[in-house]
Image 1 (spheres, rainbow, N blue to C red):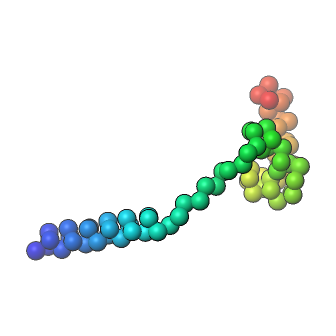
Image 2: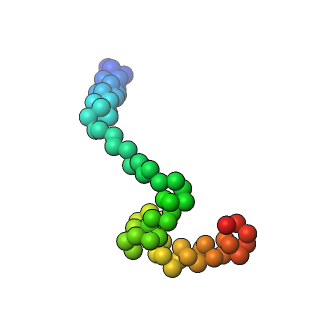
Image 3: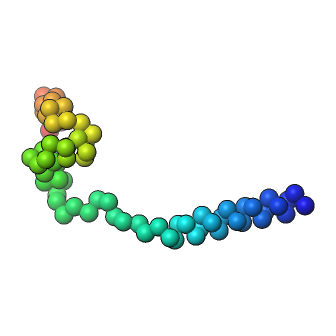
Length: 75
């Protein structure tokens, strides 16, 4: 009897998750037409919050990172 209850609950959970996965419409997130270089330049030259949102750091931190990478021959 316990096995029947466990199987029934598992089936209910499976079908519920299957139902929810079909209900939510997936919307593409990364749809920019920019090349990789243009994609990096846009947040740097645009609104100050864009670089923080896209890269997770402020502009001065990003610029310092680029400088360090250039000094070590990575850029």
